[in-house]
Image (cartoon, rainbow, N blue to C red; front, top):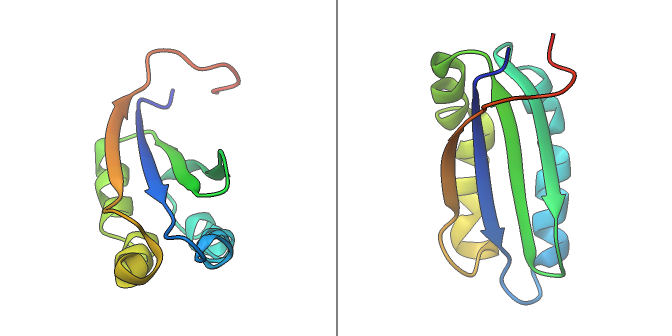
Length: 100
């Protein structure tokens, strides 16, 4: 069962919404290459609010992801694209449907 997750909230600077969206979409192959990342979602709530939600079987996978290529790309572009620093929350999964 997946036990660990990350939820990252990203607020785009005005006029940078499309670039942030493109950056998140381009990160999918990086997430697919991470063996310990079980699921990875890039999402958008409104014009400027974006985020990432991902799950992991083990804490080491979550830590590897936090120190991986997606996080590095996000931080390299944060000052240019984000209105404020990303909020990254560590979650513990209590129950999940479809987890095998």
